[in-house]
Amino acid sequence: MKNAGKIVLIDGCFLRCHGRVLENLVGEENLIQFDALSLYGKYTDRFDIDSVPEEERKETARQVADIVRAELKKGEQWRESRP
Image 1 (cartoon, rainbow, N blue to C red):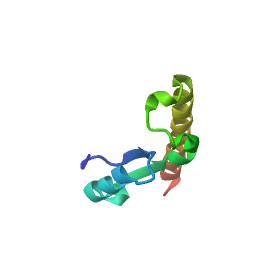
Image 2: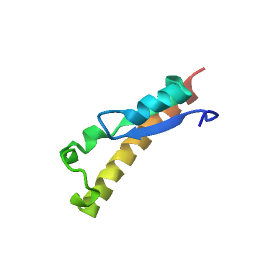
Image 3: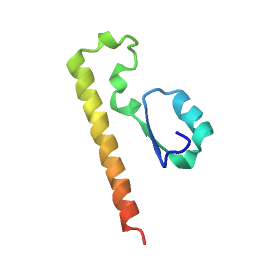
């Protein structure tokens, strides 16, 4: 990871443990972070993955992936348009 150009982190925990660790390891400038918690906030009171039906888990994961992909694509377009 230390040699990667950019690292994408999709975080779903309000504690941001993974984000804080990666910021220290690779530097904030090399990290693109997404907070997925806001997208599935209705599930924050559940700890067991099986307490959410599989189809709902898949749909929520798809929504998160679509948002991350769209945001990354915007970033690519921004970089391509820079002089």
